[in-house]
Length: 288
Image (cartoon, rainbow, N blue to C red):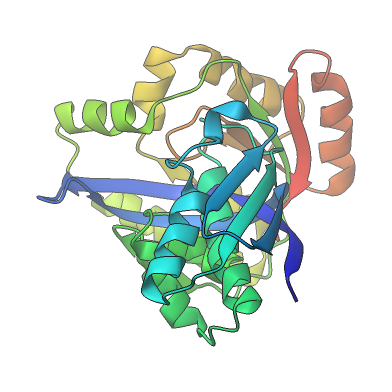
């Protein structure tokens, strides 16, 4: 097998609490991620020369800062691979949205290069490599619904019975993750209080039981207040989603995408039809 084409999914944060900045520049987090089926398409193949080539329909990611490039470079170095690698990325996941598109691309690159070069890596070994690339990358090795902690390297699967029907809307504006973390640091945010811990516990319990109402009632994101102040459109989108029938709506990650949870597919589809005239970048989707 010298050529692989595969989807690369995205995620939402149903819960996100940020701790203090560590000496290495990362922050400790306590989060609940859920994989969703808004996806990029990646094609990877071996090439004769020793290069790593990234090709995308979004020119700004065709460089060595691309997470899939970093994954390929790390795999080549660790396993002394002499063959070159070409990675083509068709982007569907918006950039600067908090949906983890780049992290998902890196994880898929690790998984599929493992297959392409018969490296024999198990999931834990792939997660370890993923943690060297970025904080969200190990989650995409696992997928599904997970508790994510540490600096993102600790990923624990949740046996979720919940299949969430969602709308995801991204405004024109994007949010710099570095800006969001720096701003949060200045607000002296020090991590979870007792109320947040209770919410996270209740959220995980609701995922396990499939209680969509309780899931929507216990969502939390530390970034939301500061992002709403910077971009008032976030609050407006949340309001639009709730007015259109969402049980609740929230910013994902550091934004700028907002998601709404609906009671069923019919309710989500109805809201999609009414909101797509107002919001250009909108996805009718569900958790995986």
